[in-house]
Length: 241
Image 1 (tube, rainbow, N blue to C red):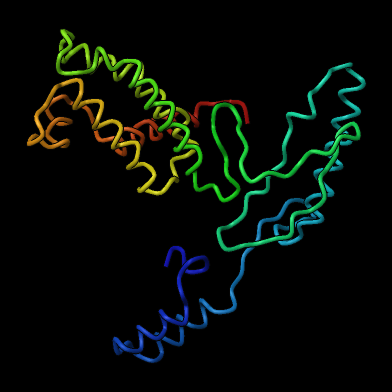
Image 2 (tube, one colour):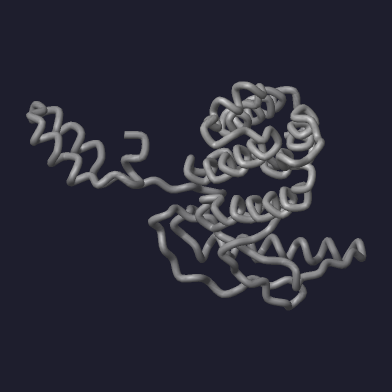
């Protein structure tokens, strides 16, 4: 029921409960709880269902920001700025007029790049992981002469090469994209398995899981889970709100 308001077909759920001979009072209780429910985010007097009001707040903030930039004589490249609205998967809206800074329109986009992370409007993280896979594959290609069966590199050094030069590219900013679907994370696992197999020269009949176990390298999903847990544990000691 965790996503009952978002993705579950409520009528189909109630129908299945009836077919499974659930007591009618339980079906009615669940029906009254699920049907006709909505939720929204709020900021000051604006809500997530009032898009025009949110845009007006953004424009007001940009106007104040513009005055601050002028007062302190700071320059900003407006042409490199973008605006994006993060929405639920099933929510559609008519894109509003662009907001402006110094009279220059800032276009609305569906995907934007910030601090090395690609953010898409539905926060699926698929564009970000696509980019990570592309960069990782390129680096693996550069290191190919060292990570292959004919190389004189030891297995230990090959794994160290992976941990130092490849893995940091793959797990960069994982506390931010931890909510990515398992299918997306698995695409990074495929790259990790390929790299470790190259580094060890393991034959085809040795499973990827066995290679990970022998090398003491966790599966990628477990790796980012440990990283995000460590990150979360440190947040309590951060004094900056």
